[in-house]
Length: 170
Picture 1 (cartoon, rainbow, N blue to C red):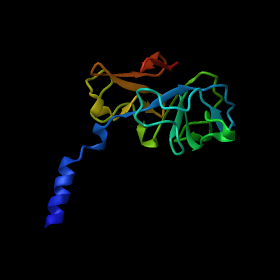
Picture 2: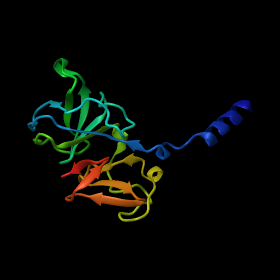
Picture 3: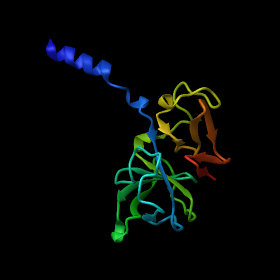
């Protein structure tokens, strides 16, 4: 009986995972990348100031603003802290060439999405950081990027979007 009460108390006191918004890290590519390259060089190997997911790491997703998701497989490739080994074209995206300085977001795979908005949130509608779950919200199926700003849900695909004062798209 004690175990059941303790389990129930723990369950009721636990904050749901979505209430802890994931804040993706951002940086840029430091050099162009061909469609077949299996390494990428980033401008920074550190977590960006607003991020709560830490520096890019093995197992995380590296997403480019022109919509390719890569799985990070190695860090510090060749002894260079900003070079990462990757598996290209993950989560339904296609490998592509990328220009130098393109915006890159990194974080856990669970922070990337397959829909345009979280359940119950409509584009242009009301939102809260805890209702969103990830910032920015990246839809890997179409490249749309959204964010909860001033309690309103904003989405973009072919317009300018900034995140933590960093241009995310284009």
